[in-house]
Length: 412
Image 1 (cartoon, rainbow, N blue to C red):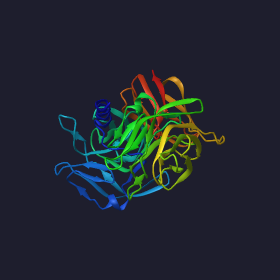
Image 2 (image 1 turned 30 degrees about the vertical axis):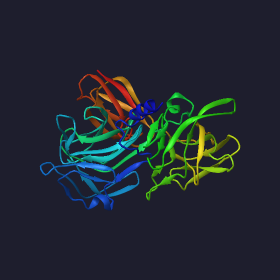
Image 3 (image 1 turned 90 degrees about the horizontal axis):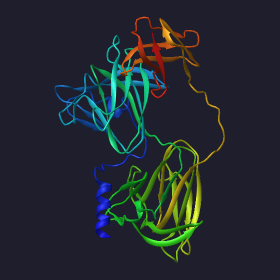
Image 4 (image 1 turned 180 degrees about the vertical axis):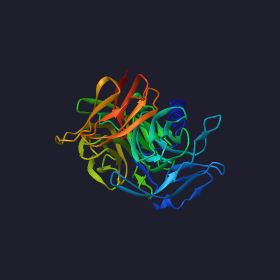
């Protein structure tokens, strides 16, 4: 069993560099960035790595722009094409940050030239593993949203050619609000043994250290028609650092919105009842307390209502053993929401194409290779685009602030 456990741990920790369970955002108008000036060597600020050299600098300077109710006073200027070495490692004019899994990436920026549109590449893990392309217009500032789907990796942002200026970046966990469950008796968990470092299995992050370990061992219990053969032992009080990030004896998972959280467990002491805290977004934002009884296994259900977030489970004092955790979507009511729609006609088209939109929007036409070939501001009264200068072929039309809603257009 010991050798099996060590093998499992080596698979779990291979390539593990940390986990970001909360949204990260970088506003280049904040004090952390606005005073940086010219950056001639690689610098990391608040988790964002700015790769620069003396020969290919990146700079932050004053510039006023507004978008989506945000007023910016500074921008980060990439200054030119991003470069990578033969091994694919960034060399200069590249931004990077780590993500722990599925992530929604928001970019606000524009071209460094008022007369030339440019592109910002968003890539995952490798320079050529492109997640999306942000159309950096010469004017005005625009927003793009892109979704990365996969495991823990590093996101790279770089210009494919010439300068791009950025005002704001955000990376937030993208979690579909689907049911999730973690049964500690399944093969994924039952062979773990003692965890000496933080690990993530099937979306459940187990924060553990050598000094304050979490362990999985054999133990038979039954509840609600389920027979358990293993449990996860938190082993003591959950701890967080000064910034509120979990350190040890904490379980964490993401939910995509309103959710019911089910916990089955008990105290690690047969003679003392204990508590398990269920918190959302931060250790002190408590949504419920599970009564971990000493005498028998029991079940607790807790409702979280809000936007996508990270749920934390931890004991405020002494050990708690858990057998099963589950999340299911919680329906709290139906709300009407204005949906931004885009309809293109005629299709196929020749000379001019018309668009039905329900609000004023920047619309772009992209080649099949993803290159922006034309863009225009449209609304309900000014709703056509001249395409007479475009060659016949297949194109895609989409809102500039929504990379996931594209309409196919055939030009004759």
